[in-house]
Image (cartoon, rainbow, N blue to C red; front, side):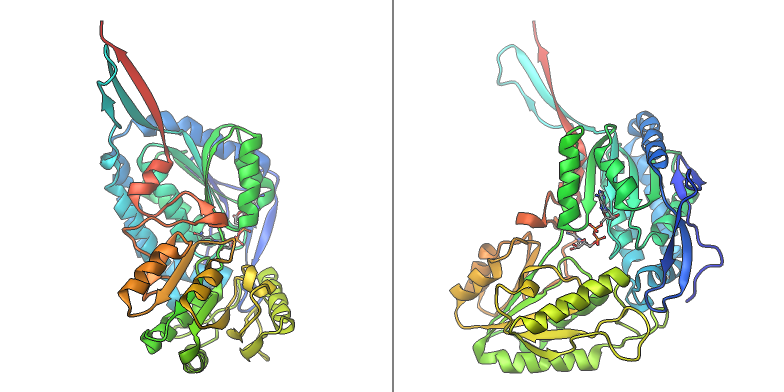
Length: 485
Ligand code: NAD
């Protein structure tokens, strides 16, 4: 599996590929080899405005199409995405370091487009009421107009579909800004959007940094709703930008510090396999990864021993373009430095380092050894902050009350899990854990395609994934009052 001869790096605005208006480009470096991969066009203020203007101009005609017609473009796009799986895998491997053997994103994203292709007719006009004498009242559900999506670099194709498909199927037009760390697959999707024949301006895909293009979109007066996935820090800036500009609707999918609680009656081997995979997959660069594990004292030694063995046996670091490799580097130098700094902080925090703890010696690229800390103090930085690396804290607990309190003692609330065979306890935890998703005898990255996804507390606002919730995000409600004389 290799890179294509020509990599698309331009901006996709109004159905055409254009270079950045001020000529600015930035470099993508392969984090596994440290070799340059591409020079990517950076959207200027003018380019971002052009993309919004194109979406605004395309809105009236697009919103008038039947959901069936809109969905027909989705189906073409979904099949083109599947056909281009290998190229998309190679592009992601070379820009953000996901091993090609671990690339599930194209098929997952195509499935989203297919699912939303059929979802448009499920939006009903709303409600009717004849409770006010002399009136027949009703609500309409109508698209906003221009919607912006801003996505991170860790699973770009899935987030791109999560933002665009629901917004488009109910009649909005969109501007998507990809992440500066992984822009190549989004640009490739733009070529497929063109091939699928979407009318110009309906989907615009630009690449750039938070400053300029991300900030311009968040402040833009013509953007009426914005769906964001990324860090809590950026989420706050976007919320503030919306407040300062046109009070656009903002949906935020943010960071996590997810707990997994392992009781003594759990199937330990299964729990180890799944919780180890959760923190190792994508080199720990997963918002919902179980980075805090609490294991009951009676089985703690066995669990930690099996966990360490799992890391030693299952993980194969190496060239991300090679099949069989399942552990890639961190996405870039900045991520690598951040994780190394957290590891140093962890070593100073009073917890015990069980395995890992740094960059593997003799390996080029931004790799980190999968790391286990045991019994780290609850108030330590690495217990409180999102590391976004293959680093797990395993702490030991005695009682149910104690562990529920500790699991919830975080400002994050994206995902939590509990492993136990006791149904009463499982349900007490399903109810008591403060998280948008709770796994019982399963953990992240397992999510329900038939379920909404989103965060409690500072992990975000709003839900996405399932059409039942996502479509609502992109529809205004209008009350129509009809007076009967
Ligand atoms: P980030 O917040 O640094 O960047 C995300 C996107 O926001 C990028 O496209 C970036 O260019 C843009 N951006 C940066 N500053 C901006 C600004 N001022 N205005 C507008 N846009 C701006 O996040 P990241 O490092 O790309 O991604 C990792 C983070 O994403 C982690 O915190 C992770 O937990 C979170 N995440 C959450 C979910 C979820 O579903 N809840 C999923 C994946 C990742």
